[in-house]
Image 1 (cartoon, rainbow, N blue to C red):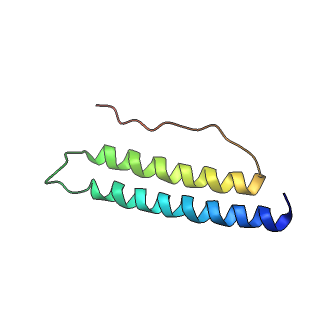
Image 2 (image 1 turned 90 degrees about the vertical axis):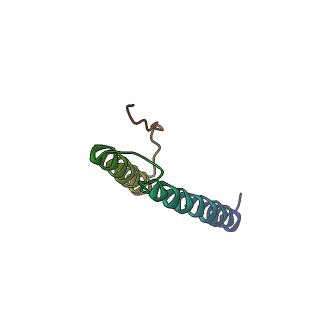
Length: 77
């Protein structure tokens, strides 16, 4: 692929994926409704720290131009 095509592909995918991530983060925020959900402060801290780490890892990948393994998030029930 040429540079222009690579750029166009990056822009298209970045816009779609960031938009989806923002929508999903908003949906996570909807979990704060105590009339529908029960959660502990520890649950909230774990969600926050996991999302923060994911953002830091994403930034590091751009800084190093490398790949990382995917992590799976789980809350202990």
